Image 1 (cartoon, one colour):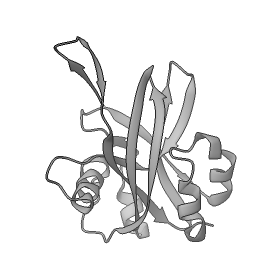
Image 2 (cartoon, rainbow, N blue to C red):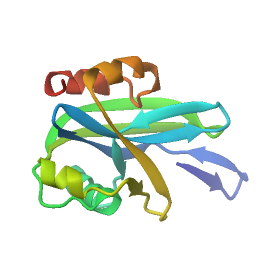
Image 3 (cartoon, rainbow, N blue to C red):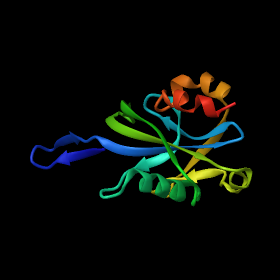
Image 4 (cartoon, rainbow, N blue to C red):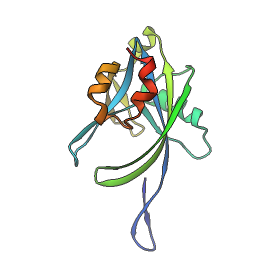
Length: 155
């Protein structure tokens, strides 16, 4: 997240703590889709978002699942953490991502919206991918090692 130093009127870079949650059903993982128009880069990332001050990682993951997809009351399992240093829309970013897993049944999958909703109300596309499909988009995964976290749970 970029902040402006008012004294020097220049950007101050911050490290952002973020939770990401991979929903699994029938050997597939649900990922949100995004685009960086400046780099013309299409990417896939698990749903999630920033951890708020005073919030535990698990509470943040449950809140993000509820806010973005309306999924509540499910057990979450911590999988791994990943550090990502990248550029998005021309702005340098640095995130520590805490990756959670959530197994859902067919009824929950069928009740999911066709698109997710960001905290600012903006919709985002979601896709269900198999392990084989993840392999074909490996370079577009954010962060790329999530495929290793998930491989034993996917078809």
